[in-house]
Image (cartoon, rainbow, N blue to C red; front, side, top):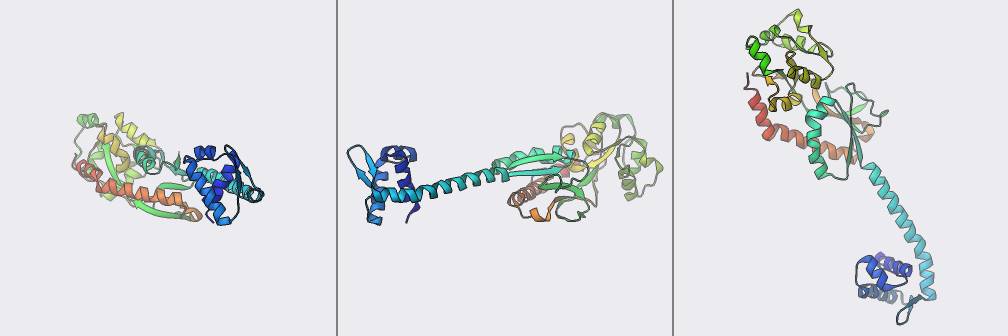
Length: 307
């Protein structure tokens, strides 16, 4: 038995008019009449008594309505509950650092919303790794070595480290041609005061001055300090790019430096295959490919030719 015919029968009973039912369902009265006629023929019983302008249920029709009305009301309630659930479940809570959010993620979220307008992104930032279960976070993007105990993680890409400065700062002091030349400038430190020391060591330079200088908790603050002309900084190429494109800072050495850490997509084990996270993961991977394989790759190549 076609459910559509039964549904039309219930609607005709509700409106007590085939014309009103047709208007409500955006079809012709003839189509409604034909559905009712087909249903009566299939059931071999008259469901309505028809007069010139009115219809009324027969005994068989009333019996059928009594059984169907509750069923269709239940179906409608189930559908409304599902729509409410889908609305709630279409929110994706994402956590990352403020630097990564501002310089890389947020400018690209427009494309995500264009493809997935029904998924709402709730974006939060924190410098220390968030507790995904306690804080109700679905997925996080984190820079690390890949060790996230008790969590599911997937590597996205490994950034490179750039040495940047304000152009006017370079005009006042000696030219930087080797890593050791950076020691003649003020060095702006990360929170751990270790990045310059490790960077100099990787280039065969040992100097106690590598730990001196003002320190900042994230790359955005470091970049702001560089823009203010306070010194040199080592920052991720991802975070430095907008300031370089705007001409606010410049790379001071030709080569970027590889780092052991990489960006990872992190979630709890039980949510790893959630449909929203799968969509977000696929989209992120596409954006990473664009970043390195599209026009953005040309930028990285060009900036490494700067001195």
